Length: 336
Ligand code: 13P
Image (cartoon, rainbow, N blue to C red; front, side):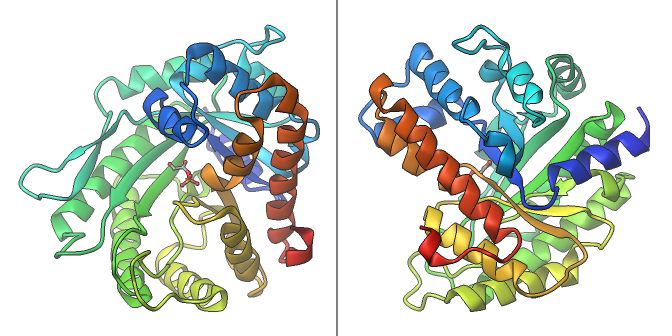
């Protein structure tokens, strides 16, 4: 697999005016999302829901890639097409979540490490055969009570780098996702400091593991005030702190940054993305790879009812359009 192909895929994932749909919830996570609409996430309903999202008319207007979970990569649409093929037919790049989830970091209460390196080389190969051209691995860091510790940051950064190396070896673009959780009483300054330390460590390890930085996409969290912090930073302040932090830590060789939403409301996620894109040219594309912020309003309209499917697709399309506009700094609240 040539380096050129990695570079081309990575830059297509962050192409202008578009972003990535994260639809890679595990069965357990999707159940917790379905709890919000009072539904049991049965296999049939999981399939119907993913079908609704991926057959939305005009999906390709503002979506460049879709992240899928193991089950979805192997499932057929209601019209009997493999989901990755259905996505690729629309000119959208299919990808796969390849980590196997979080576990407590032994010796460091409250901190977590991501698992899934065992058998990863074979798993990535299988997903590639199923159509995935990129992968995702999520590492998580909490702020508070001394966390994130240096040990937790280093351990996760090293694992992220080992994952990225295995993906690139197979010609699959790794999405490198270090998420600083927004829960907590911490200030935006504390979040900036934790993000700066984490990102700089992650890039140190990526280089140490000989990762081609032109062939990755970074999926970070924004620099935000903790959800329980009495002082909540405004949109401009978040945009400025986030870009400042990234300019210090993310090399210009990286083609793009695709944010996670992390529990922010759909509207705020879009407003933050817009504000960052208004700040003038940056070395990298500033894009989105939202899960909840793209899906929540549509799922709330759908409620598992076939009769609501079309309206849910319209609501979903509208969110992709708002974020597509935010990629150019052209979103305005009137669009809501
Ligand atoms: P959220 O946008 O809901 O945070 O999900 C993005 C994601 O893929 C987390 O790994």
